[in-house]
Length: 621
Ligand code: FAD
Image 1 (tube, rainbow, N blue to C red):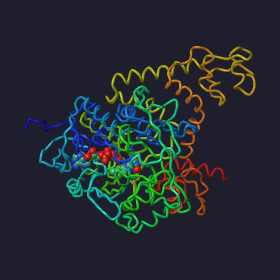
Image 2 (cartoon, helix red, strand yellow):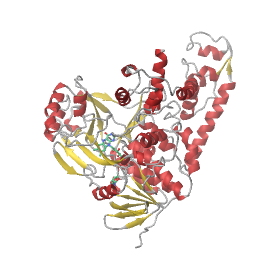
Image 3 (tube, protein in one colour):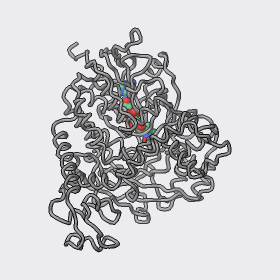
Image 4 (cartoon, rainbow, N blue to C red):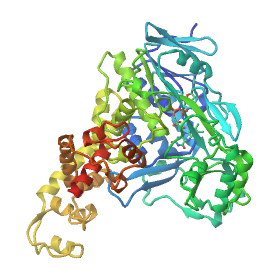
């Protein structure tokens, strides 16, 4: 046939993992084929139309620093931008954007279509060609055979996908899309460990039927954040308001009354759901003493009336969904445009992967995204990017690139998955990273863009902008270190109001910037030589203010290594250890490890949790 049938890299699935994987492989010079069910659903958001948030924006910025698409598409599609944790330290600050679902998809599709060396073909893949435990290519639903020495599988929630609304079940990869059952069966014949997970989504509402004036308003931030290091506010479309509503005791009674027809509570659903994004029925059961839960009411886009009520994901029967929605103040006349549902799907134990994301038992085959037990667009995209990079490196006969835990959240994500596996959908949090002061969202480019350039992922435009910013930071840091304010000078007087007492000696600008009362704007106002570059100025400021904490963190890492044999009392009150996640605390209470070293080897107990335990034990001594 005339259509090319031989490629370097084949990617199956055009979701968040698949699009980044295909783009990365093609950017690195590989002849790449992206095979997906529908070209129209490239970059489709299956659930919440939002990108970023705590832990997740760190991944988005890392993808961006390596030349990926997600942040750029978010800047073109974002209809509300906020920085979460803005009052907290820079390690946990996180940018989140509400996105127009259609604009996002269009932006991803435009980036894919502009990528040299990347072909897209719409067709379901039903089989893999595997010879001598090595992948050779794929076979589509209509029997077309495409060959490549590297194949990346990013099929999301589609393998054996089963959707539930109450006790009604149907097959599907997500609402409106078919499942990938033939491929799922074929994969089950290969020696992978397969299990089931579950996720869910809320019913969507027609804005015209909601009393929006009666709800709390929530606007985006001013100044408006941007997602990409190359981003510009002028790219952002029109900005929109979101709202906050609340469930109440009546809502909870309705939910409890519907549990006898809930697939979750009647044992119909076997797969474990996301702990940190539970269904509303789970919340009502788990937090029985709470009389209300927040519901963030978010527009689905600029050209639709549909609203996404974030916080009431449910798989209860449709009549119960109607009642529970209408019991919420402001939703009394709500018209549901799409019912909420849960979906169960196959995932593969990520402990069967190398850190390159190549599978251990089929050479040349990579898994990325939800198929590895994660949840979230950002986690999927990050893995896709890494799999694309490593498939391309293999084509070049070069060693894989696997970032370390202290280099990137991408390193934390992959290390967690392949060493500990997961029993529930894994999502990223800043608390999973033990080096989080080093791994901020604001410095992802400084951590990774040089590496991206070496790999061939970063184009000249990004490289030039990055180099300019890096040079400006260095020049400004040197200037701050060698420019001084003398006591009694005009400059010292101008700082007088901000400082508690007059300067007692000569101080460099760099020393002054470390003071909590002063920020970079105060220092740059002392003369006209400050850096006129928003991102560079932010870096200069953060690096000065947090230098001490970062050094201390490095020391703490060394100390943790020394405290391997520290005894943990059998009756240690883990509830009193501040900062531990529920997941880690549950595991420690169940297993009661004898030493810190033993605690560190319990799957799911992160190095960050070990640091918290160490601090707790030192305080008790
Ligand atoms: P997907 O985005 O699912 O993309 C898979 C792609 O592969 C699709 O394009 C599909 O058409 C294609 N494909 C599949 N099989 C084949 C085949 N055989 N041949 C060709 N193409 C194929 N995440 C959260 O963080 N929070 C949530 O609350 C949340 N709720 C969710 C609710 C629902 C109902 C669903 C479906 C998902 C939810 N998610 C949620 C998960 C989020 O959508 C995924 O984490 C993310 O989309 C995964 O990206 P991915 O690229 O791995 O897979």
